[in-house]
Length: 255
Image 1 (cartoon, rainbow, N blue to C red):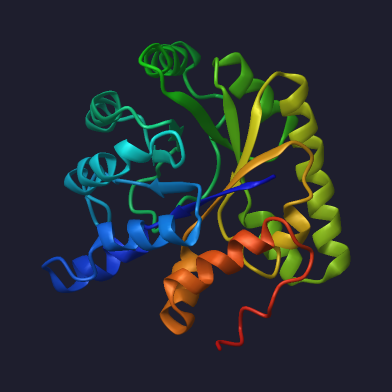
Image 2 (image 1 turned 135 degrees about the vertical axis):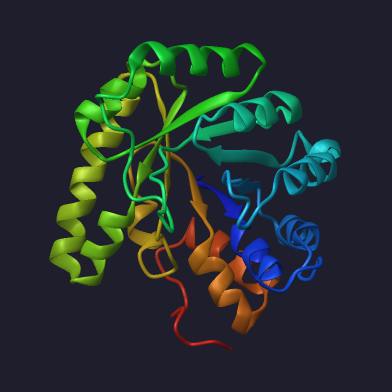
């Protein structure tokens, strides 16, 4: 079964827009866990514009007693402070993501021209402390092969291109899905697990969850946005159903 990891960054974005601690990211984690989410994802950026390093530590302490049930995934670019934080809190998984200065959100996977020596060293270091390493890549055979050569345990396929193709209609969506399927099959051949994330939602997830060898989807923006109208508990349960069912309610129609 495809596992859902809820990215709670946008809860922190709302909190930071006002200051203080409302809404509390820890409350969001608790609601997601109570609703059945098997994973929590955070992406602490260097400028701490949403999730902060302090948030990561608090969430890690909250989830520690549930370590056998709930996976904790930390995303981020491999800058020294992020790597130090990962080594400190020891999440189940660290997803290494390239960051472009000034970007609003992730724009692409790792380039295959990225320094191999440095990336191999970083991956090996994280794995040495028991952290599974996933590398954020475009759905291309060359990118998957690069991730395998770096020693990664998984790839996270960047799914915004799929989401945009899906919006153009069934044919475009299926054509894009086939591209991702080829990449997923290659990952499996190379001994890599397959994660996916970015702009997956209740509309496109029933198709995408059929991806060969898909282990996990990380979903934040669409999920938290819908939670404003129907509640976080409700929407987590909707996404859990979407991970296993071809039929979901129309996410544009709040109840």
